[in-house]
Amino acid sequence: MKSAKYEELIEPLQLELAAMARWAKATGERILIVFEGRDTAGKGGAIQAIRERLNPRQCRVVALPKPSDTERTQWYFQRYVPHLPGAGEIVLFDRSWYNRAGVEKVMGFATDEQVLLFLQQVPTFERLLVDDGIRLFKYWLSANQEEQEKRFAERREDPLKRWKLSPIDVAAREKFAEYSRARETMFTATHTAWAPWTVVDFNDQKHGRLTLIRDLLDRVPDTEVTEEKLEWPPLDHPPLHEEFGLLHPLRPHPVKD
Image (cartoon, rainbow, N blue to C red; front, side, top):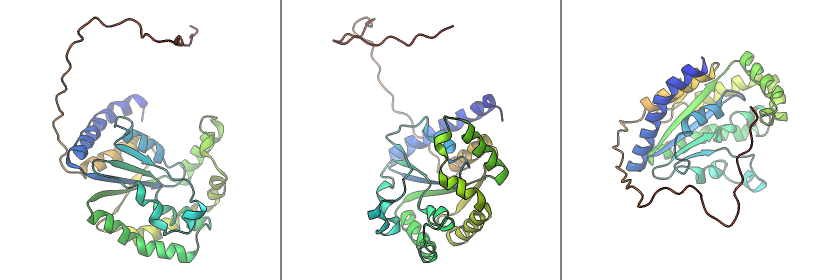
């Protein structure tokens, strides 16, 4: 999809997202969206497409680092609970507790017993969230190995994207099939009536973002909330041409023609 066409199609969806945010704020709704998928699937781009026109104080992104020594001794879900949404908030998890069923299982960071316990507990954990009124959406962004390799190569060659690669990514490339089996086991155990998975084709990331956002908007109630009228009286003096202060401001950086 050409960028111009994508921008044409994403704008009305972002207007609907802004309406959804007004509705959440007005009603106190709590919205939690989980983004999962393989490395390079497009989670960051999808999250950015949702949040870039929303108030960052209302719409938060949670991308937790690896657990600390203390967190490794806690109940597995404990470190995620403080990041759950409060009234009127939208929280986007860039990976979530499902790390245990994916990378931790495949790369050997969790034991078989820990993974089994997780798969047994997570439906109950999510049922508690939903029963308490949180609107939980779980998206799996799907991309095949050929496309994944193209995106790895792009990151490897682009110095502005090189930070996205890690030794784990290198090791995980040889475990594509293992990740597929882990994903299917996870789906079987955690695809529930109260917290179902939605799989979105992200081999074309622009199409994937549009599809995901349209699905999200279609699954929330009518979000029409009239915007408050903002009084904007005229200034009682002409606009000032300079901002006064003790320090001299930096001038714009010169740009050569």
